[in-house]
Every structure is written in structure tokens, then in C-alpha cells.
Image (cartoon, rainbow, N blue to C red; front, side):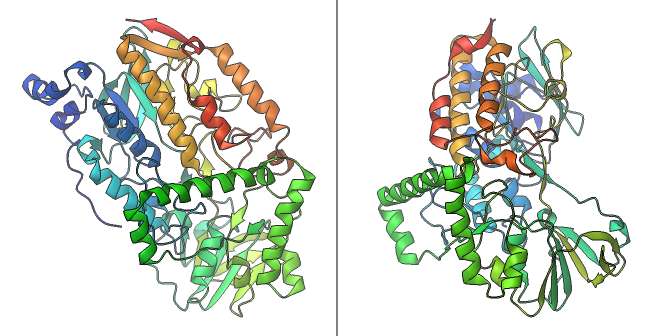
Length: 524
């Protein structure tokens, strides 16, 4: 990843230019900074997170002529998921022509499925193109937010003790941010190197090492075939096998990239076609249909048979749950890796980790120099990412005691002018998450324009509207495949507050128009 200059946004003057009141700086500096956008001087907007959601929201605000915003990012660089995940083989499992902002399409993707470093480069280029660093405060983590009903403003507190005031908050912190570490006895006893895929230690050279990989999910199917050729021995510990379909990845030759750059119509056509192919395949993944699931099962089993010749190994790698119930994995070479002489699939349960390696329940010690934890992320929808205090002193964690819910995944009753990007029940199981993200940005922008145009104090979704929407979502979940097995999609009570039960196109249509009647409106 390329380095970057944090630029503006690190002092009171830069922050004032973005419309955020820091409580510091001179009046003269504030006047000069705000002068170009006179009508926005009293309408600061805070964007929390500089991943796809935050960056996309910032661009759309600028395009709408709204410049009074600041982006807060807790890390030292933008990118979110694609900044943090740099493990060997890391790539997107959605075609690159679809996994990019529709208003910032990129003809220069090198592969059908972009690698993490290329996606990160894309995001950095977009940020630089729109000069967003001037409106950004990196290394600034928001640790608390409180709403004042009298003024209709949010006060945000940072980890450094600073406070900022905002009329509207766009929270793009993401649901899968912090690594999930397994609860295995003796993890602190291991004498070698241990790392999570989301916190890869590039100082550790795996060449010629004995490596143990714990987990067989989305990150494992990428890292395992990538490191297998260079390690001495690779032991992969599998608790539950997953359904894996072919990726059919390929390199985009230079002539094609040049062609798409010269004729952007064909890039848009490629994006359109790939999106609708994923939509048409959607019911195979998310509907609880034995007939449709058999199609997915057949595709996955065909992929298994073409990669693995050993029938006993195939049996160990074959799931016993319905296709789509857990996340469907995408790879052309994961299963084939287990036929290598230096790779072993271990299905016996782990008992503990010891100084020399991993001991399984049968008593066997699998010695290792390095342990890789491919165990995914904590689901950030179970609770508020930090204390968020709304009307009447009620916290977002209290509002979500029975599970995280939000109207159209974006707004929660009692938390006015707070818009969640990629909130509860807005994750896709079958297509690009950015389709949902862009729909949410558009919806929130409609609300911001209304608040500004009519000088409203706030808009707060009505509780009955939120409850009715959530009831409909949860009723539809009964017809989805996800409730049939245990996965990270589900809360402890078995309810699904992660995914949207339907097509992306339907979600876009449902969020296309802001309905003011759904909100309690307070005027200044």
C-alpha cells in the first residue's frame, strides 16, 4: 500500500473548513474557512469511517454541493476492510467491475476479482481525486456520541478527549471490523508466531515453516492455497466444511483495460451484466428451497470433483448443511490444495494450543512454527460500536437489547439525524454490498437536503414505523435458508439481523424515496 499525507483535518482551522465546530481556533480562521459555503456554516456533518461507505457518502455530498462535512477515521489510513486485510491471497469474491462505486467506475482492474491491494489503491486514488484528505481527521477515533434535543445536534467525543458538534452523523463503521479470536485453551503458551488473517504480520517469513491454519472460512480459502507452495508443512484445522463454488478468475489483458477506458459504455455494460447475473442466482443462495439448493449443491460438488480425486478426502470436505445456509465460498484452488503432499486436513476437534503446536482431542500434537487464525470477525451489529446516547438519555445498546434493528437498515427511533451505513439487515448473501451502500447514501442525502432546505431541527423515525418494518423483515426470514444452521449471520437467539432477505434491486427500490411521514419532524 502506498503511504499518504494526512493533510488537513488535523487542526482546528482545517476542521472548521469542513464545518465541524471544534471549540477551538480563532473566529477569523473560522470565517475565512467557511466563507465559500456561507449557507452551510451552521450545518456541520460528521462521517464516521473512511471505508467504502464513508468515502462514497463524502463524494455524493460534494456532488450535491454540500461541503460542510468531516470524515473521522480511527486508523492511520483510509480503506477499512481493504486496509486491514493484507494476508497472502486476499481478494474480493465479487467481480471487480461490480465491486466499485457506480459513480467512480474503474476500467483498470487487473483481474476479474480484484486483490485487496488493488482495491485499496482504488480507494486511495478516489480519495486523492476528490481531495477528501483535506476534510479528514485520521488517527481520530470517536468514542462517544450524545444527542441534544434542544439544539438538535450531536456531540462527538474522540479518544483524545476532543469534542465536535454535528447536525447529522453518517456512521460508516462497518459490521465486520474487529477480528474474532477463538476461545482455545493455551493460546498464550504458543512459542512460535501467531497472527490473525486480518492482522497479518508481514515480518514473519513462512518459507520452509510448519504452519497451522485454524478455520476454513472466506479468508482461509484464499490464504491456504497461496501459502501452501512455500511452506514445509501446512495443517488446516476444519471444524465445519463449507460449500465452495468455482471462481473462474482471470487476468484482464492490457488491451481490454485500454478498450474499457476508451469506451466506458462497455464498462458500464459489463457492470450491468455481472450485477444481474448475481441477482438471478440470488434465490439459489438465499431462498429456503430444496430444489434451488440442489442447483447450488450440484455446482459445488462439481467443483469438488474437478479438484479432488481422493473419495475419502472429498467426504471430509463435503458439508452436511443446506447450500446457502452459511456463507458460500468462492475459489478455484482451495480444495485442490489438500491433494498436495505437504498439506493435511485435520477434522478432529482442537483440545488446546501448546508451546510447540496444536493438540487435538485424540491426543495428537501437530507441531507448528506459525499459527494462522482464519477465524473471521466479530459481528458488529450485536451492540453499538461505542456509546451512542439519543433522546431522553437512551443508549443505542439499550435500544438493541433484543437485537439490532433499524428502519431500512439506516435509522433507529430515538436517535435523530443519525444514519447508519450498512446497518442491520442490509448485508447481501449473493451480490455486491456496494449496491446497498449506495442506496443508503442516496436515502440519507435526501434527508440531509430536506433538513437543510426546511431548516429542520431533526428527523426521527417513528417507533411504530421501525417496528412494522422489522416485523416484515423477520417474517420474511422464515422463508430464507439462513435459519437452518449455525453461522455468524445469526444472533444467539437464532434471529438474523445481518442480511437482507431478498434481492438487492428490491432494497434499492424500497429506499429510493424518502417518506417524511415515517419520521417525527422537529422544526427549529
